[in-house]
Length: 123
Image (cartoon, rainbow, N blue to C red; front, side):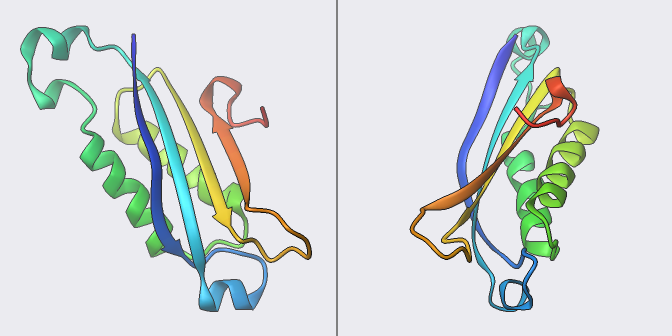
């Protein structure tokens, strides 16, 4: 078993409850941790036998930039389930951060984590 980690993929997205968030957008950061069996690709040395992390990046980019969700829960679930449906994974953990959220107060970001080992339940 091995892990592929894509850290801090950064996109501009239009996700949020307020109409202002969906119109002006904000920076969205995504981490993906992919657990997979590497026995076959280690033997074959062929990209087709493993998870192509460039393709994973493209999936995340398309979902974040091509949709307008009200909730981060919807965004993170769509990312995780789409990646799971396209790649042979044993487990996936996805983290989504919304930078400078529209909350009165001082904080860097809001982060949500999805873990397929808990079927997406909060960890």
